[in-house]
Amino acid sequence: MKPLVMVGAGLGSLPRIVAEAAAAGGTPLAGYLDAGDDPQPPTTPLERLGNESLLDNPEFLAAFDLVVAVQGRGRRALCERILARGGALPVLAHPAATISTTASIGAGTILSAGVIVQSDARIGRFCGLNTACSIDHDNVVGDSVSIGPGAHTAGRVTILDEAFIGLGALIINGVTIGRRATVGAGAVVVRDVPEGATVVGNPARPLPAKPASAG
Image (cartoon, rainbow, N blue to C red):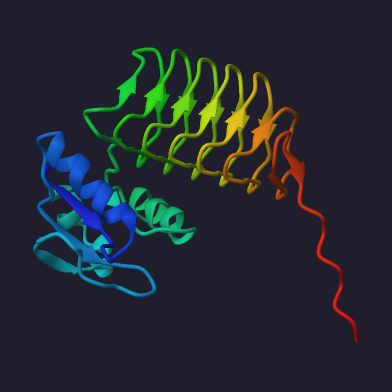
């Protein structure tokens, strides 16, 4: 494995998760690049190597593996830019994560401490699996999906691209979560969630549509 560089830094949780997972796994970060809408230095001491313009530099991309710590939808765009230019985005898994030997995990996905990925699960690219969440057997998880701390899926769940699963949510067997859908914290999902919908509660139900503004 090449030296690992973090793309993006700042005060959010993801850069700290990345730095800790890398150090715990024996490949501490070699430095970071400024990236995102509001670049800020990391909270842990790291060497600044430059800004995201280095992502267009073939020599830089050949020398380093990269992990993108920009949060939000801008993360996917940066990941795709890196891959399109021939850069490498390894899976970054904290050594306290447990991953089945029959599971597959896509480029640029980050797994925090305590994550469990069970047999024959397929996790897409650029996902974030947060502390102590679990993905059970035969799940299919798309690209750029975020799974909150302590969230759990049962078997044969499908979660489509860019969905967000909140803290402590539970999803029963065979359910499909639509593209860019949101499952609220603590929700218990017992039926499919449509694309772009937000569901909350136990059992989870869609939030009512906001009334149109007068005038």
